[in-house]
Length: 317
Image (cartoon, rainbow, N blue to C red; front, side, top):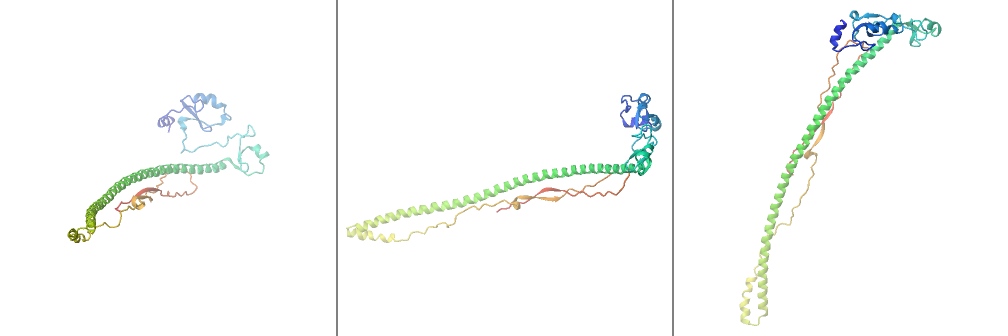
């Protein structure tokens, strides 16, 4: 694919990666992996160390190397960091860095060495492994984030639903308690009215009997104090009328009404309990062309729990 096609596909301009101003990119250094305009290719890039050995290509021929394309590296043009003017020719395994011929004959004599390309491939394999692992973790983290959001959604909905049920149950039981309380008060008032009526009737009977008894006492006193024999015998005949027994009063029973207060427990109101409701997460990973070194098992997410209100009906006590 040509560079111009890449520009259209990306939908944003790419400026020269050296001057960062000129959008007219014409060259690419494969060693530096830089896109350059004509001016930077002629004046800036030649100032780089060993720039004369770099591979400069027309972007119309090579395009822009993407992640899926193979990266070509020139192992014959690696300047030694210790000896100027010399290129590295081997890799010292013992010291873990690139060395030139002078390094071999002086400092690294007797060390295990190998071709740069060989160790490059070994290390590149490690890079691929790390990259594959990081990519997998990235996707797994995305799945975890989605799962966390979904679980939080279920829990939030459960919280709102349970709270609504508790408020509704409170209203229902409050209405039931008020209704039952009214019934108890009505029964208590009716019993009290019956007792009051019986008390008033019995009290009236007693008052009438007291008047009658007081009258009889006065008459007896008169008989006992009289000196007139004729009057005595005449009043004595009325004593037989006083010997009648007092009427029996219908006293109420000796019980009294008391209120035994009860307790509203979980069985009356309801309780919170946990239940498994959130379905297990399904991990869906996209396939990609990556180096994979080992099987990676994905464990299912543990099901989480939410709170629900188990309500109970309020019955008459």
